[in-house]
Image (cartoon, rainbow, N blue to C red):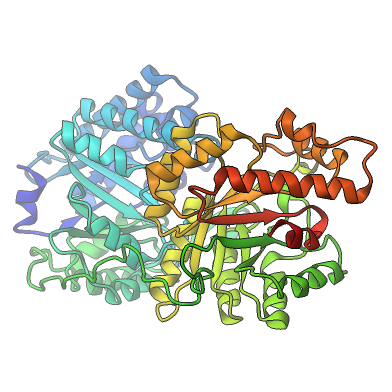
Length: 592
């Protein structure tokens, strides 16, 4: 029997936590997945406990079965997963259960714990390898659990559905406030999963206790045609002598799960802190009849791209006039005199927006959001702070965006950000909770929930110097899919880089402001050429400067180069993004 047939008549009770229960039985510190082949009786013991408690679906002990966690090659990973499957089958047989009749086994996959050091393509390849090993072992149910988003797993799910007859379950991990580590809300995650044809069931596990999960599920519509899963933690842990201890009672857990089941949830089980006693208690109070008595409501359609309001910095653009953005660097100390002087000077020019970099090159400067807010409040100019992913996790980013919005900021440049300088890495760690695309997802999320009446306009960076331009084009399209409305490029000096930007424009249709940097001296040109990654300063540009030039001569050489680049890109550029060394904004008067 396929699991879909079983679900027509009954809900499915799943097992509970594997890792926390395993550690109680056999001590902390042992990776459960490493025991699949070496200590199979330990793994079978956990499975039997849940089956005897009443679980109908058990998950293979493969949550962390990947090459990095197990320090093995592809063949070793296949052996580990095959052993895990055999352990689950053996446990079911020992309990007198028949797979496909009164018992089902799902092949479990969890996030790659150290996946931050891998590219997206590498992570996807690892998930494909795991999925193939599970299916070859015998799995016809694939359960992706504890994910913060679907960015890496969705291509894998679609591939597997095309090649294999598998039932796919996706479960997200959110906190008690309903947000994942990627900054996405539970409602948004369910909407996105609900829109994917290849996903059969979707829901939540881990991160949240049963009471909070009940509240989250009560506040959302369920996607039509999908089974809903709910496998919360026992509660929230406390740490006693470095041990994680969950204090919620199994009776409370079961009552909350009964209420969750009544919402129309088809899969119910537990995650961290639960054990067979929790599952047994739950089985005693939940109506196990199929979850079809209460029809799920239709979901509101996910926003595909909010209409941009007049707060966007191009709202005043007339005809074919090029947009002008000017970067002002926040000060490294508390003296903001030069920044404010430059801002007031720019007020008298045809400038559409002032931008403020976010501690570029990983060196501390005044906060870009706060600096932008002060300039906007004192000059009335339109501002756009850069926000990078290096220094803040999802909580801090959302907090910063909320604070900026309250203070009138409506334009954001979302970037991944430069890494922490090598010499500082012993004391300072980059966060990189997500990249620019993930940051755009957070902004889009806030636009659809908090900023609906006047959403933030946001854009991204475009690097024409990337060796593989096709990768940059693909990434630009991904950013546009998340709602990016414009792109600012790195400074352009060469015909080759200009042509590469032209190609991105032709391939994507993106609104692009070409980067213009009027260099001011030979020393300045040498520094940019040798110290700034991704910026190509060619020999023609270098030849425009000499060591004997006066300050004024150097500046005029830079103005001439800027005009040359503007002419070079005039045909396809929607505007220009001026990054003027040392905030010498008076040069803009000569350029424009």
